[in-house]
Image 1 (tube, one colour):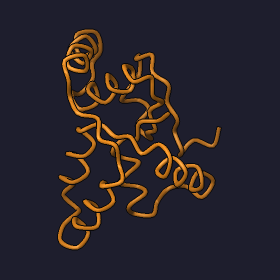
Image 2 (tube, helix red, strand yellow; image 1 turned 90 degrees about the vertical axis):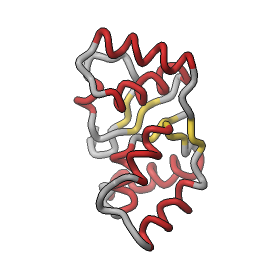
Image 3 (tube, helix red, strand yellow; image 1 turned 180 degrees about the vertical axis):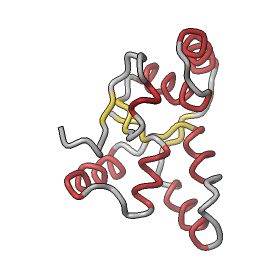
Image 4 (tube, helix red, strand yellow; image 1 turned 180 degrees about the horizontal axis):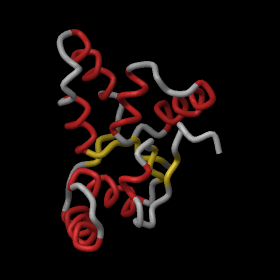
Length: 126
């Protein structure tokens, strides 16, 4: 099971996923389209998306399972923030992935440095 980070949605929407990973990402979006509520906010709030693209983006996210904040996620986010130098949105995404035992799909591996989280980076060829 996977949790898709905002940057992957942006790259997918812009048709910028590397060729070697396109099939995998398409499959993940079909079978494991889980996102944090933070990703929904970031993706739909992305400053380069508006008008017809925003409508298309909203329709795209209708296929996602959006994982909302709850007490366990909030508590885990607080613990992550106390022990790591990480931005709040990334801490929420990490907490969500950890509690749900999901592999995080992201290009921004450095944002989660030091957190014991499974990561799949489709931009890495290894």
